[in-house]
Every structure is written in C-alpha cells, then in structure tokens.
Length: 329
Image (cartoon, rainbow, N blue to C red; front, side):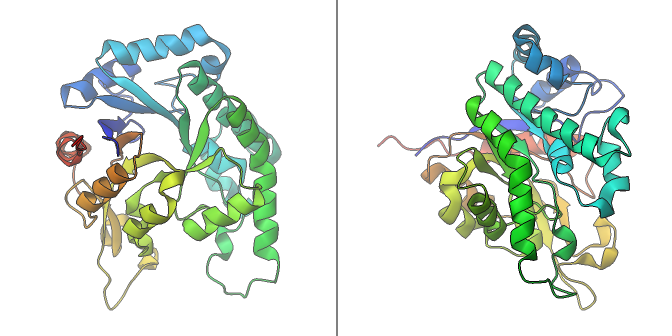
C-alpha cells in the first residue's frame, strides 16, 4: 500500500490571457495560495511551456521545473491530450480538430499528424529530462464515428481500425519507452480508447506495449455507466495517473447516456466540481491506496455550474481530505 501524493491541479482549464493565469510563475503562485502541492502542465499551452524547447534543452526544462519549485510546488506530469488527439483523427473531424494544431500544419492532415506525433515525443523527452516517468494523452479516434453499430459495422472494420491506430502510436510508444516514460491514455468518450475493452484491444494491437498505460478518470466512466470501482480491481497494475474529477448521471424520460445533443448543463450526464457529483471518491482513494498507486491525485475541473475559482479552492481541500495516509501497523 502507498499514500497517494497530492493535492495537485491540472492547469489546462485555468490558463488564461488574464493575470494571474497567463504565465507559469503567477499561475503556480495562485495554485500554491489555495492549497495545492503540485501542478500538471498542458504541453500545448505556450503561455506555460514551450514543449519542443523543453525537449531540446535540459537547461530550459530545468528552468520550467525551477519556476514551479520556486512557488513551493512539484511538477507532477506533462499532458499531451490535444496533440495525442491529432495523432489519429478521422477526416470527418478535420475542420474542428484543426483548432488544436499550429497554423503551419492546418488544412494538411498528414503534416498535422506528423507534427502531433513529434509533440508527444517531445513531451516524453522533456519528462525524461526532469525524471518524470509518466505523461497524459488521448489516443485519437479513427473509429469513434462507428461507436453505435448502425449502420452495422462490416466484419473486420474494428480490427483494421485498431491495427492502424497501433501503427500510428507504436513509434511514439517506442520513443517513450526509450525515454523511460509511460503514456497514460485518458479513457474518454470521443477517443478510440474509451473503456477497458478498447484499451485491451489497443494493447493487443501494439503487442502488449509496456509503455501504454491508463490515466484513471472516473467522471468519464460515470457518463458511460461503467463500474469505475471494479475497473480499479481489474486494471490497477496499468493505472499510472489519476484525475480527480466528479460527475453525475441523471437520466430522464427524454434523454439518457447519449444526451440528446444538448449542452452540458442540460445533459443527463455532466461534469461537476468535486463533492457536487455522484462519484464515490472514498471507494476510489481506498482502492488506489490499497493497490499501491504511486502517483498524484490531480484535480481536473470542468464543472458546468460552479466557478473555476470556487471549484479549485474547494478541490484542494477535497483531495487533501480524501488522501489516505496508509497504515504502517
């Protein structure tokens, strides 16, 4: 058993062009002032880090770490969700996902995918410079448009899709393994890797690649109506990262899991600030501690009702209150 580290905060939803959220120094000072011990940095946000420079220069990577440490915090991990999304993207989403790419590769899917792969590799290299052995990402999606089997999927389509996904990711995973960094995929609706079954299919397609791990986020499992506690029992050896994020599912006679194309406030399944949703965090922290999860409890805030400032302030206390100092007797 191990005591989970924390509380930490994922900075992606808080970064802004307005102070104190517009640079790494001031946003870290803000996070420290409301009770956090660590920060997870989105590798796509140039206001916080130049991830290519952090890969090329150990001195610059140490400079980033120094800014975080000077505020009294630890740099917990880098996150490459947006770049990972672009590693494998179906053409139906090209226009929307171009927003995640730099200008020089927009309207050019092959160049965009190559840029995205290099970004993920850069984040792994930067992580290795700092002795960080995990990073977060999305798998991207070649098959998500076929999620519901209508029209009926042709035999072999799913297998072909995962073969292609593995082809795109294996060179990246090989690079990460060489750097001693695991890619922790956030299992997320909209991604080909969105639950345990699809994660297992990806492992099979990559010949059980040892660098392919899981970022555990129970909020996405609530929205899918998946047993998120049993998930820990099954996959605890593969869980390398943990997002502490709450959610609720309130189906009606009009709408259920798929949400009726409604906005977040009106959907039966929606994200909430910590403690305002339905997630059993006592059970989650117990199981992760019991199984020896050796990582950080990182707030991810995406509440559709509560303000980010209140959500962040309450979140640090919520996580601190749920961290179990495991018994040594």
